[in-house]
Image 1: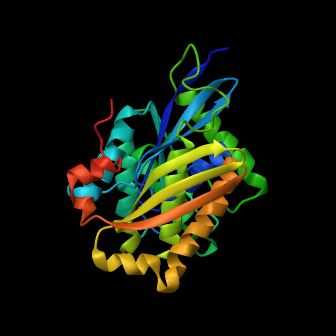
Image 2: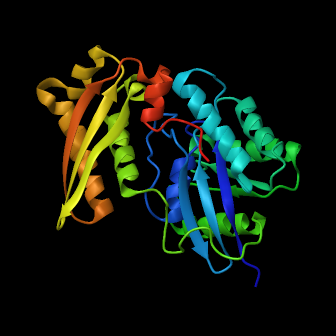
Length: 304
């Protein structure tokens, strides 16, 4: 039996459902999910191993066209995922506002000249169900033979079969390999420390309004596992303006406490035991426009 292994990039507009899809594929939460677009900043890798092969799904930031600060990083990150993947899945949602946004993703993936297929997401939205066939017709104008899979995170019975279809389709498009790229027991190569920082950032998105979450970064400063059944974590929530700090802290520290409590509960599920989590709010003026600060926070594209 031929064994295959490689990377499949999930490419789509912001808020197309890529992160939700990735979490279903690996049957665990590794990519943060919020209703706000552009939640995903860095590529996130999810590993799925089968007897026939190993797929490393790559959740990329939504496709943007901008060359300034953090958004420039997000744009380059998405471009790098396209370039470095062995195959691509165009992830398009039926609630896209513009037809051109769907066509943009389909053309972008097809023009990569990589093997590809299409996943239509959020097909459970009954008020927009008529768009499923519309999206399929758009896709077929670009390539009438490309495989199209419909997916909804709300489906229960059908979900497992659809996820298996995505996995098997992905394996079929990958190159032959002598061995897996990662240990078959892994579901992600990211460290717990990295996942913790993303969980805290997710809770910031959920508890803060308007544009504020987009100007926040999280840095884990200390991760202590020296005590049995207790992990102590210290992290900074970094804001870009002095006026943002009291908003993140909230009256009587209510907001930062809510962020910390929600994050701690989720981190405890991740590590399997009790967690002490201490959050500090730190000001770094306009960090998202400062290349050095962005690099210090891990937002840089110079990977080897």
